[in-house]
Amino acid sequence: MNWCVIVLALLLSAQKSWSYPSARFEEANSFEKYLEKARTVLDRVPLIDGHNDFPYSLRRYENNQVGDLDINDLTTSEPWASSSSSHTDINRLRQGKVGAQFWSAYVSCSTQYKDAILKTWEQIDVIHRMVDANPTAFEFVKSAQGIEDAFSQGKIGSLVGVEGGHSIGSSLAVLRMMYDMGVRYMTLTHSCPTPWGDNSQLDDPGNVPIHDGLTPFGKDVIAEMNRLGMLIDLSHVSRKTMRDALETSTAPVIFSHSSAYALCNNTRNVPDDILQLVAQNGGVVMVNFFVSYISCGLTATVQQVADHIEHIRNVAGADHVGIGSDFNGVARTPEGLKDVSEYPNLFAELLARGWAETDLEKVAGLNLLRVFRGAEAVRDQMAADGGKPFDEWIPQADLPAESLPCSTGQIKSIKLSTE
Image (cartoon, rainbow, N blue to C red; front, side, top):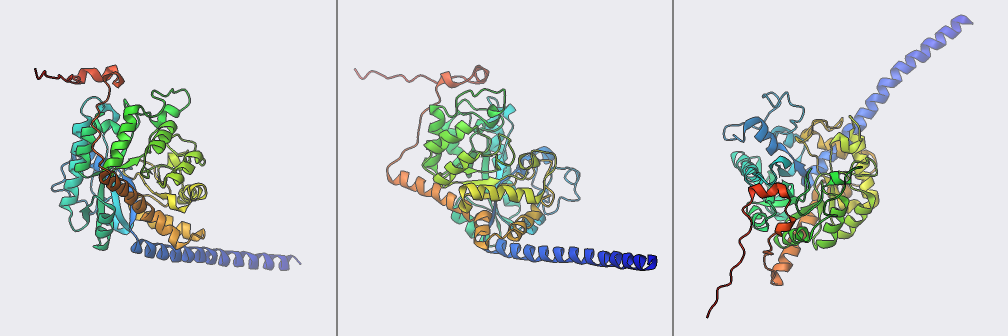
């Protein structure tokens, strides 16, 4: 009897050891099929990422000296190879099937009321020079059609997004000049409020809003962005600023790199009531990969990123979600999304959950293209209606005391007598 028990136990153990590798093989084989299908989807439509901080890495690591910098492979070059926030180079962009990228022209809030405009222009310049130095990989584009044209040529359409309204120095003239330099979205605030808009940290417990959203001049900024055809980016702004912008804008808006507040209650994420307003506006929320905004912890997985995408789809609809990784701007990325080479893993995960390929195409880039064309249509209609540049100056009373040492004030108009 004992021998029978022993033999049976051995047989069960052997069966277990055989079946487990087989199950793992089946699982791996299934994932490879989803991955292959995901790559096929990304061959058909451009994967458009709403936010990558690689230009700021160029400032930090190379002092913006890009003329002789080989950015094809940075995985073995120092200091890039040792940096936990170095996620981008041309080879990995190709592996990740990236079709277009909004490169972030970011400067810190410490530059506000000082040299923010100068440093932002330097970042716009380095994006132009990076693209010019790599013409076989990149094409600088300024329109939705430009993205599609570059994609059809096998190039990564490259666009500029200014991350933070402090970069315009509260000047509509500077905003217009940045549009002429190729900027196609501006994030209204960053980690600091501007003299005309509240940022997301003011929604944190213990903090108090300064403006209760947008000031009248802040709404002028929205109107001028509509007139220009510049996308309004509501990542980093307070909830009231989100609402004010959505009520003011006649064009669809974007969240270039934010996730779902219902799954991670960080004020950088978008609450459900705002998601519903984004759907009504026709905009898009581009999901951020930073683990602090995905899990509210120190680690996250590609499955949790997919959860955020699904939540936004469930609340706002499949037409209103996209990808805004925040690569190179964060030190901690989810397991399965370690750098720009691994975007297909996310789409494979969504396929494994039963997503239709047509909806994956929307998430990849078609939603952003629709929103971009919507902003361009508003611009064209305003021009046809005779719309002129908004030439208001911000009221001096709106500027905080800390801005005054770096300001000479506004010249009062003098009306000359004709007598």
